[in-house]
Length: 359
Image 1 (cartoon, rainbow, N blue to C red):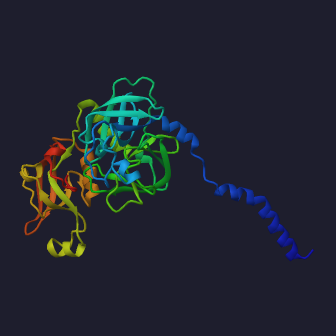
Image 2 (spheres, helix red, strand yellow):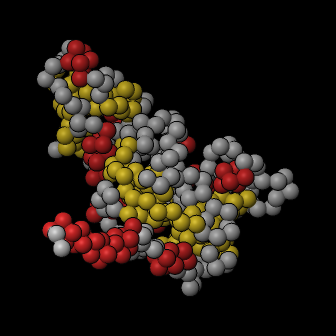
Image 3 (cartoon, rainbow, N blue to C red):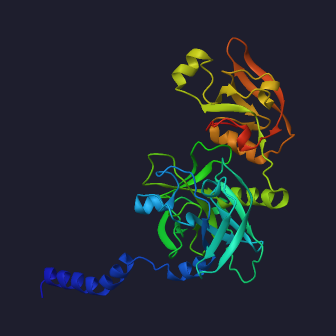
């Protein structure tokens, strides 16, 4: 046989041997075992009060049926939550339960429980509910979201209408994506969409551990998803369990990332390459009392360099109300100024303006 014939025969044998493995590589991994593990801890939340919310907002009924519940309805679906330790606590989206008192939880096993509202936070979109008689309920464990990497596979769970939990798969598309929702805003970006069918549900890793709370996306981002990382979530939950409220530090200012470097060089100083702009001040807030001015560029807070909004969020997450630090700012016509400031405790959402970039 000629060399070319032997060569063709060798290639054919190689393909016969390797094609089965190549075909197997194209088959997606089944997540059935993980779904079976997680589903018993995912719950549906409903109420006997008619929620007052826009049809295109967080209402799962409107999302799936493009209409409002019938006028004679006695119960109204709110959406998804999930059960955690300590036993009896349920995490969900703040938007789903905001302003409602008569809450009911239905498990995937169709067991019903009366739930009480423990507390929540509008900015992080997290709320905590509690079931008094919590015997025998399955709960989910948390994983360390700091160990999650871009490209890691994830599963998102929803139980929007109480029929049956649903699951979607995807991966972490990016870390630390700013949604404009306050100091707890270092969200995961996902390639699976978050919507009224799954917001409030758990985002889990391939071991079935919670790495995030599925959050409502910003408008116009329907093909993307966002999740509040478990490390941030656990800190908020601990405060709510201990105190019934969140004890969060704040500066009392509206902050913006720098505009173009050209405009910064023209208005401030050519040497400044990074910083956060003070766009507005809250009357009687910590920054106003410390003599910050609108137009100041924050360069550092204590030992933390502030190059962008994300750095400001990191500083606040590591701080607590009452901490005293020195802020280094650049002020037009005055140059660099050092300002001592004592962090305050952020007031309740009802006492704050509806400002997306408030810190």
